[in-house]
Amino acid sequence: MNQRSSLKGILFDLDGVLYIGSQAIDGAVEAVNKIRNSALECRFVTNTSTLSINSITSKLHALGFDIPGREIISAPQAALQYLQRQENPVCRLLLADDVKKDFAGFEQSDTEAQFIVVGDIGNTWSYAMLNEVFNCLMSGAKLIAIHKNRFWQTEQGLQMDIGGFVHGLAYASGTKAMIIGKPSADFFSIAVDDMQLAVGEVAMIGDDIDSDIGGAQQAGLSGILVRTGKYRQSYADASAMKPDVLIDSIRDLPRLLGL
Image 1 (cartoon, rainbow, N blue to C red):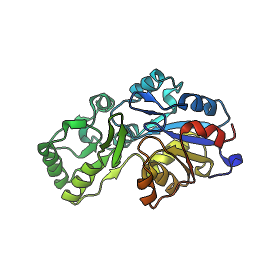
Image 2: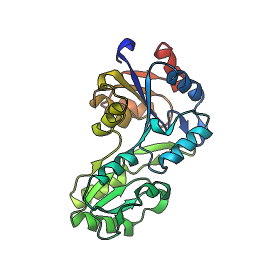
Image 3: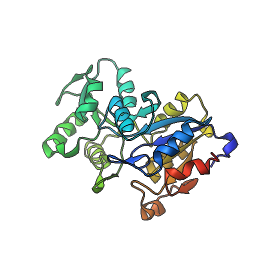
Image 4: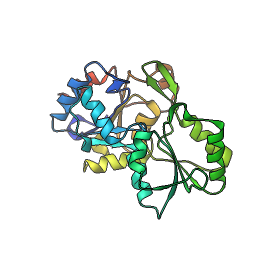
């Protein structure tokens, strides 16, 4: 990892690092407080596409974290910024209702969409929906994925994430998905630029060896992997990505940073 003297910022993943479901990870609140009260810049980055920024902030506050909304950078917000730069985009939004509120200003269509935005929609997936999206893609629509995670950790155990659906739609239609969130280098650049730092001055802490750690390293950041959340040793060992540092939990981060 970057030498402590050159490290000026930390990017925190949320789900699996600060909390799992509705339960804060042991010691996470205290660790975040200690780091935020240091000289280090902090941002909280997430691929979560089921909650708006306001809802994420409220959830963090309910779990005991004193984190302002301005320090949270979500993949849906990055997608929103991208669509705002397009000329009169017509969208199909496969997003949770709470997140859809942020996209209310765009014209929407199930069959004539120019942009298909794919996020977490739980059990709503169906063959009919996939086929409608497939036909839009065959007609030239652009496939935008909030992320392409394979799975995530819930209070009930591991659960398949949207990566399989994104891959299947891209394969069937012969198109390539635009990945907005982690591990996109552009997403990490947005977060680093928001801190007004250089990539070599920032470390990412996450529970996903590929999306969090691999994405961060390929963007020029250091990667700190935690053994909480979706972490599985067999999965980490099989990955081509290797963390700069491996720690048991975020509660160990202040000590690693010399705080």
